Amino acid sequence: MSAWRLTETGPLPEPDAARPDRSRSGARRLLVVAAVVLLTLVGAGSFAAAGTGVFSAERPEGCAKPDRSLQLYAVELPKDGTQIRLGYGLTPETASYPGPTMEMMEGECLAITLHNQVSAETLAALRTNPAHPLGVSLHVHGVKYTQQSDGTVQSASYVPPGESRTYTWYAQPRNNRTGAQGTAGYWWYHDHVVGGPHGTQGLSAGLFGGLVVRRPSDPKPDRTYVTAFGDRQSINLRRGEATDTCDTVNPQPGPTCLVARKGERVEFVVIGIGNDMHTFHLHGHSWADTRTGVVSNGQPFADSVPIIDNKTLGPGDSFGVQVVAGDSVGPGHWMLHCHMQFHSDAGMSTMLHVLDENGQMPPGMDHQHPAAAPATAGTTSAPATAGITSAPATAGTAHQHN
Ligand SMILES: [Cu+2]
Image (cartoon, rainbow, N blue to C red; front, side):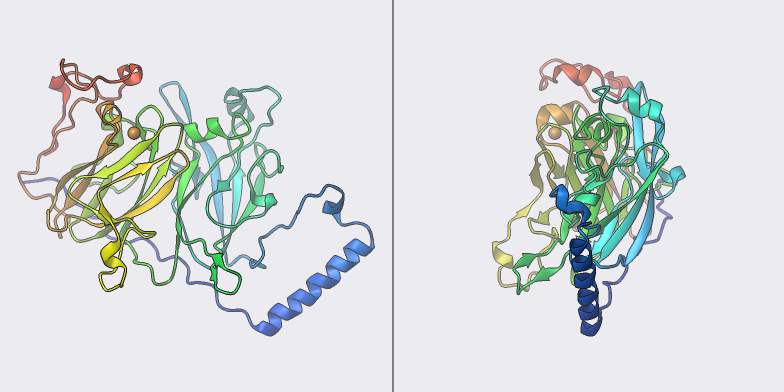
């Protein structure tokens, strides 16, 4: 009998409902107040940004007051070998890489206060230039923000060690009058300051996470996982066996344990970090190549939407995939990997464990993780870096669950 049993039941918390409409009279009052304040400032010659040409609004247009706020902590995590690891967390104790998946509804305005708990010493060790300032930041893709929430050195919107700063994200909705396209989609956030002016060292240390912006009618998943495909053949900065640490008795869904019950709608936020091209491939499942990863069969264009099981991912790209776990194919250990062969051969491969409707892995579903870099001749050659694999390259060490 199988030990696999998924007891965790809770679906993802529903994102806050879209913010209520504000009354027109309220908006007009606000406009009048804003105009008076602006005129007063300009009249007094004290409009701070006028001299520098920097637009210094604290929040994007349409986001007069945040609908929701949360606290985010940047902390140092245990080293991975000699590699410094950093993570974002909703509490310092729960920091991880990837960081917490953020969800917003179009129209929502979110204020995130980032607390930098990474020591100056650690940040200095990651610095590529002694003149570069020490700090961490929060830079986001896809949604709207002003210069003050850009999370860069050049806009001075970063957080020195021990300090805090509030960033404001606005999930601007579509507007047929202005032609604004809206912000619904699969995005990501990351540091842009650690080490150098592009946060390259912060990113590779773990300061990144996924963001999903939905429209009210979008399909809601039962589970969401972030898979960041990165340099050195990594998924979420891990390779080989380290990508999949699911406990077979009590698997806890997380960055290194992709698990679902048959029939659940599973959403992947797929992110390209680092410098390499990758492909996202999932065995036994396919999805629609649309904004949401789903297309309703009733829609007139549904027949022209490609259904795919492999999608190319470049640096900085992000997209979403939604699949119904085990649909037609049943429970099992379904491989999820990069399809650039030398990447997957070097360990860029993990598993989606699909359990039955009761959260059990049916008997006979044993699986193995092959060694990341096969030592046998005649296989696709691995690149020079493949010697640094997290899975031993001897056949006898492949492990078996159950
Ligand atoms: Cu790859």
